[in-house]
Length: 171
Image 1 (cartoon, rainbow, N blue to C red):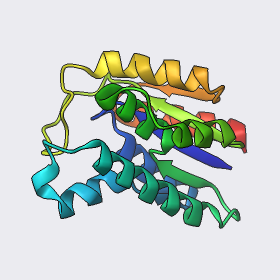
Image 2 (cartoon, rainbow, N blue to C red; image 1 turned 30 degrees about the vertical axis):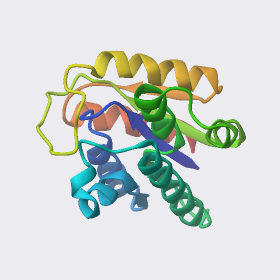
Image 3 (cartoon, rainbow, N blue to C red; image 1 turned 90 degrees about the vertical axis):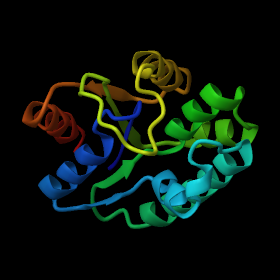
Image 4 (cartoon, helix red, strand yellow; image 1 turned 45 degrees about the vertical axis):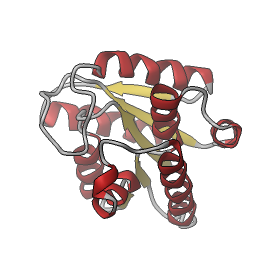
């Protein structure tokens, strides 16, 4: 089973991945964009389409390696859906290869985190007042590609418990 956690900024994706991995005693794959911007700090506020393309190809390559082990639940902190929405929002129509990748994804379930958590400042975040609009883009993208998903809302343990209930129904 592959579960991908997607959603707007500051909606608890990484925390949820970590908590689910602990609950199921499994592994999760972190989002590569954070690592990229630690190394390329000068680009945090002025990244280009080339930067996003580089982030996308590395994220997808790492994802492929991570998913090669299918012996247990695999949890992804973002995937091509996040890259697609980011690309669409910042640069317009995403590359054909990214759309083709999304159409080819099979046997994956999405947990879409809702923007109901309080905003927390972070040097890498840029959409504090835009999370509802971006959430709508995520819903539209998941629907467009026929990706099965459940919205995950709530605070604290309620959010985690909702996610666990969904994952339990999938296994």
